[in-house]
Length: 119
Image (cartoon, rainbow, N blue to C red; front, side, top):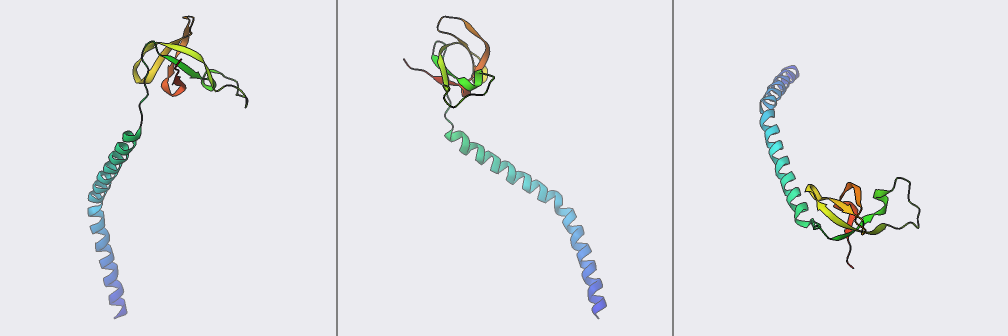
């Protein structure tokens, strides 16, 4: 009697495994949909609290000191460099800067490394 029960449970187990394999594609699709919905909700939550910062041509900005220097900073070094003017605004928050005297800086600067300066 015990042997029949073991054989029956083994057969039932095999049948259950086959059924699970048949349903695995549906489970994967459901999981992908839940993941996409979660990602959308997280993105919406994050974007609702992000404050976009932008500059216009002619605005004065300070440049982050550590972004412009190669050597490591000391503890007492300044955090921001003297004011620059925005000469050209490019896409994705990058800007071309010039010194107050009018000399252009050689590369573009991202808004993450800039701060508006008010006289």
